[in-house]
Amino acid sequence: MKTNNLVKVLLLLMSLVAISVAIVGCGDDDDKPDTPEMKADIVGKWKWEKTIDNEGVKPHNSERCKNKIDYTEFAKNGTYTECNYNEECEILYKATGKWKISDKMLTLTGTTIVAYDKEDIGVDFKGIFKVLEANNNSLVIKAEQAFRNGREIQHDSSVTYFSRMKK
Image (cartoon, rainbow, N blue to C red; front, side):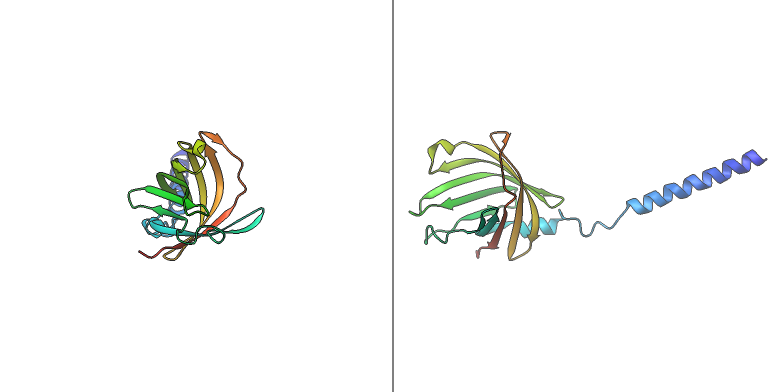
């Protein structure tokens, strides 16, 4: 009889532990960073404003082309285009590829398709960025890792600021 009661008590305790684990494990996912809302906030055309790295603040386009704007555009279908211009308003480089976001990490994988320095054409790259801010007006990302042709390259954990371009 005592053994039967002990088994019942142990089963009850194990059930309580299982229920407790299930309750604690099921947190609120409303603020999950890779929600459709965050993805929707990133979709669009973004003007590069500035980058802050170990050397200080680097404004984009301030000393270069006055007629064209450096931009990155994220499409709904998961593709992106990035374009930068030189002082003569020629494309310094242009890259296309795919983007995805998960757990506030933005991953870009692509290929340079146009480059002022011709040896950079066809270079495959991958960049992993932490999204610090994403809303209707601004996007702020911090470089975490960078790869060029499959090899990790040195990066300086720069933070880049974008503003949404008008349609």
